[in-house]
Length: 139
Image (cartoon, rainbow, N blue to C red; front, side, top):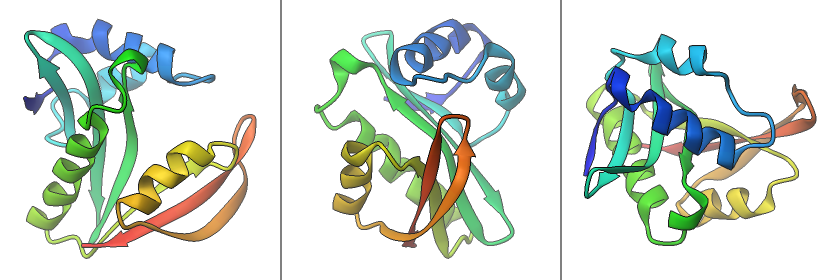
């Protein structure tokens, strides 16, 4: 089930973040997104397995972060969260969804390519330790 994140969910979200990224976002960043309708989680049997954060800027949906617990990957959870984000963008009249992904992370790039995204560019030094590949998909 996908639902809006509540404050009591933050420890589980931060744990997913810490297990998913070499340079994880700190707790206060997630706290700042509380109340945003684009901050959602995937929950199964009361356990938080993944989350996504998407925002609408003018008529573009920007996928700011998405992650799934490592042991819960490859079961379609990331795809469900991504599809939710695309629908969210569509409901808010966005014509495009875009994101940045680490240049080193070819697995995640392949995930987005398999979901209809295209590589649109590269941003040097976007991450502390890597460049970013900009990817987009028309909605």
